[in-house]
Image 1 (tube, rainbow, N blue to C red):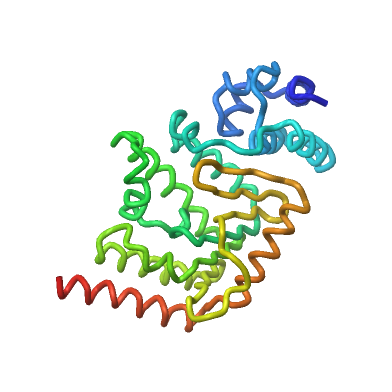
Image 2: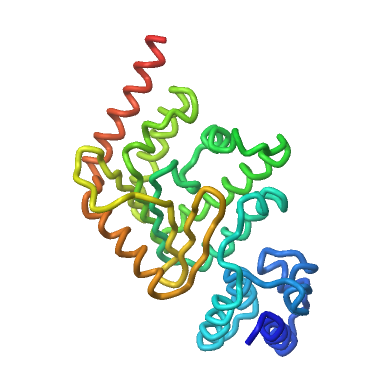
Length: 276
């Protein structure tokens, strides 16, 4: 099956469901024109596109698995960040939010920055300061990211974050703002459905931290590299990242030990502010 056949199959499923294109597009967090291009074979859908459309159509697990596998084979797996910036980073945040809404267990490994679901508005601005976004685009992106964070309060879902100690020490924003960001991490880690682990620099590493990645249950992995975002539903790829997550989880500090380390790093930032 090629991308034209895939688009045709999605259209046939939509027609059979009796749902209007604009309704499916809205549920799938995309524009009606984008859905039309996908259905007509003019636009190759990503794995995320297909998954969101199938969720909107409420198809059976068998059909979902079959078409998701087809999407994996025909889709472009890597999307350059410049494309997301051109189309609107806030739109991509909404796309990710739609996938997160269908996820029971979300696991994040971050050796580069505070995970987006845990960032303060000031930290988001610090991370995006070199992205050449307009003020309007940046504010829309911040708003979309903060809306994603509402999912953290859903007790029916579990969130596990692994962050390297170096991330807490990167000076991306002024010292008092970094202290406030660390306080937010500690606060969120006290919620019963959220686990935050810090991989300390004092421990032998189980491997190279390399890239950031997110695991959506065991069905999807998104990996971030400097120029692009890579999406995969390949079982062997997902297992690779699950193994990597588990290896770093084994040496990470959590609970009281995590809170003690975070407090020490926060206090270092506060002392720096007092003496500057």
